[in-house]
Image (tube, rainbow, N blue to C red):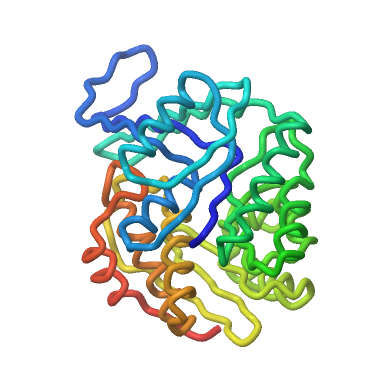
Length: 310
């Protein structure tokens, strides 16, 4: 089983409209509301792949109750800790003609030191039944940015591998604790390195240095429509994604993490795992709901990926 920790899950509302004009009320062509956030997205894909996952983290307020009911309806195993703050709601408005997306994100509820202590105990217990723990999602501004780093150290001390997918200072601090895998996107890597997010070559070179100097087993760098890079102890790959016409790009990175993890735990060759990650990320763009795609379509797109050594 794989444990997935979500500090700040969400309720996602996605609206497909013709166009967005300030001061005018657009006609909604299609709408979707779902439980989401990085951890939930990963768990949804694991469910589709037949992989058992256990979700934990924080969920408070009436929106938190709605989230938990939605997880139950999907058959996802979870045990979230209650907090005072309300689970946030994100709204994604997608313009059908241009594909332009406007994302409105509520602030995350505050997490207190006692909340973190409860989560730490929960994660420690998860290590008894899970072969791998995934820490994912941004941290609220009220949190110590070293929170993930402390969890990584605790998980590693119990002999379990840990993946990290976050951003900003929590990413920088978490890397110091040397997780097994980190999954930054181009903006997150640019923030970490001070480089231009559009400079693909420089970002990949930085990923190589990061992996070598820190001893991280894998750095999975997603670059949007440009593709992705995988840097490991004995592998340096660049992947060109298959051509698709994207509808919604939210959840692509989560789809990559879930697909790569699934193949890695099946002990498939790393290059195959990387290719499947690219295919899953591409398939994710075809659905209005994040992390909700047809597995056969993901496999079809995987076969269209072009993987090359760097």
